[in-house]
Image 1 (tube, rainbow, N blue to C red):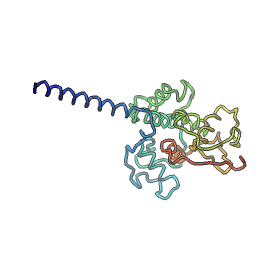
Image 2 (cartoon, helix red, strand yellow):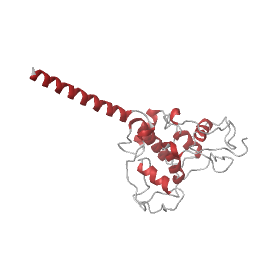
Image 3 (cartoon, rainbow, N blue to C red):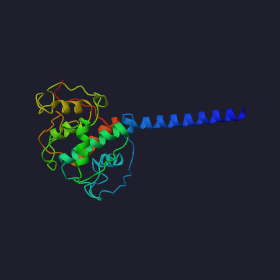
Image 4 (cartoon, rainbow, N blue to C red):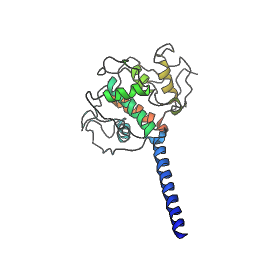
Length: 231
């Protein structure tokens, strides 16, 4: 009898352990904002071109620690560099992968960005052959179009009331309008002035991108916004 009870206890313990392991594994795979956790340690001065007093310094550090951005070299972030199409797709792939799986591990083979492009196509972030020159600087419109698809709409909850047509240089008929308005309404983008001017055809700096991507990953950093002249 004791032997049978002991066997039953062992079976129970094994079953509970397996269930707990599966539950924990499933929790890590659940799509959620809580998957954005610190993965790296950023040391002040790590990027020699990022001053600790710069307006973007905390965002660069946060984005690096979350595993979303890297430097252009081991010691430089590239503060004066614009982000390219390839880098934009890479960033979107990392955001998407962490949200859905808790990890952003990609195996690079051949051209460094190809694994990110392949992932982005499979995830519906971009369409195949959407971009002919991955090395070109991304316009703000292109950046918004790509990055807006890195998270599902329910993770981009509206916190700002922005009327259609309120952004002065984004027409609702523009191909990128839905993406831009979604990001403004979610507090991810705020524009370059009090009117919310977006400058869709201009390039975008890596420092600005670091700010935007931390807004994507951390809901507490998203900005309340009321455009001048809207009311």
